[in-house]
Image (cartoon, rainbow, N blue to C red; front, side, top):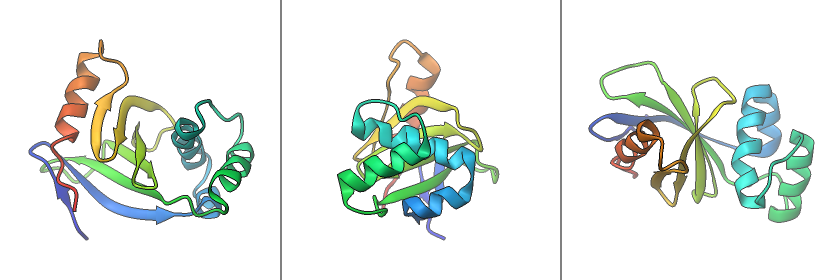
Length: 134
């Protein structure tokens, strides 16, 4: 297993999925992917089926290049967050095992907070921005 490391966090357990595989992962994963792909659309999806139909229209099939990473604090074993990315282009960080998105996003491997007034999310994004991508 390749590890991407920063001074404070690691991206581990990289796994790729197509949309039909996401459905098998359950409600939390479907919600996470729905929120991640809503960025591409510019507005939220009401259901995973709506997301699936829109993705097929946008991308032509179920393979939208979805990748999921666990985010683990350096020196720890248990993930605290997860990152879903589509087409290695744009992603959203979620609380691990939760449909709750953080304000931390990733665009072309650069992390930032969508809430510049939230000091904790800005610091988290800056720490994640130090992760080495290979």
